[in-house]
Amino acid sequence: MSKAAEQPDTAELLVLRNDQNGVSTLTLNRPAQRNCLSEGLMSALSAALSDVATNKSVRAVIIAANGPAFSSGHDLKELTARRSDADCGRAYYQKIMRQCSAMMQQIVMLPKPVIAQVHGIATAAGCQLVASCDLAIAAEGTRFATPGVNIGLFCSTPMVALSRNVSRKHAMEMLLTGDMIDAARAADMGLINHVVPHDDLARATTELAEKIAGKSSLTLAIGKQAFYEQLEKPLDEAYDFASDVMVKNMLARDAEEGIGAFIEKRHPVWEDK
Image (cartoon, rainbow, N blue to C red; front, side, top):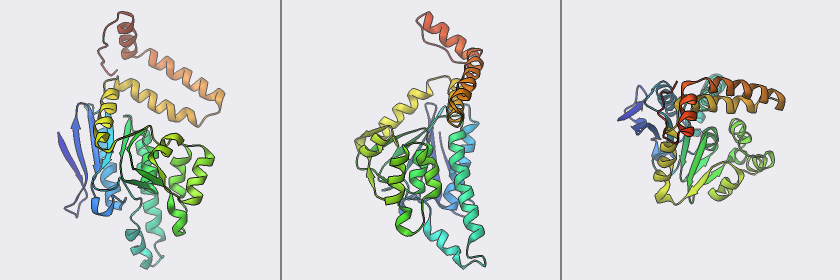
């Protein structure tokens, strides 16, 4: 099944969607603009994410991109155009930053695993998008950066996702220098999971997504939510919380089926409940 998320008032399909084998691939589609996150593109991606969140046939999500780049960050031309507003753009900038932050959190809170399929460059808010996804696979030659410091605009919101994926010193080095890092370095730092040849990127990402889609969607949803929630808790509270989650999960039908199948040496039949 193929769908397209489209902003009103434009004929451009900003996010393309393809659903197959339980995986929904959402493709950023502003190639000429290096998929910079305009207001319209963010609205289209957010709408697509809202739809897949409640679609029972979708069990995993891939965020990919058309053109030479995954995403170059915010649309600086769109932002700069609002400096002529009476408030020098303050209200619009607040709106855009809130919209972007909400979209990134939407990915984290989505009850389906989200995998970034990255190529070309992922910079600033584009790097933030990669860091916000649960998993990421990048093609050889891909480069990452939070280069705002080079243009007088520190990457403060990308910093939130970046600092929750890599160590503090690695994050600060990226943020303070603005330098590009290659895919191998990004993998070493923990920003991405795997680096593959460019020609294998789509296949490798799809294989990972389909492997995950073969699990119980209820179990995935419980686990993903618990993972991010426990990260923000002190150690003792995290264990108490995770223990309660394990009890809840153990009482689910899919846990009963999965454990039974393991003991009986057969494949489980998931009911997602």
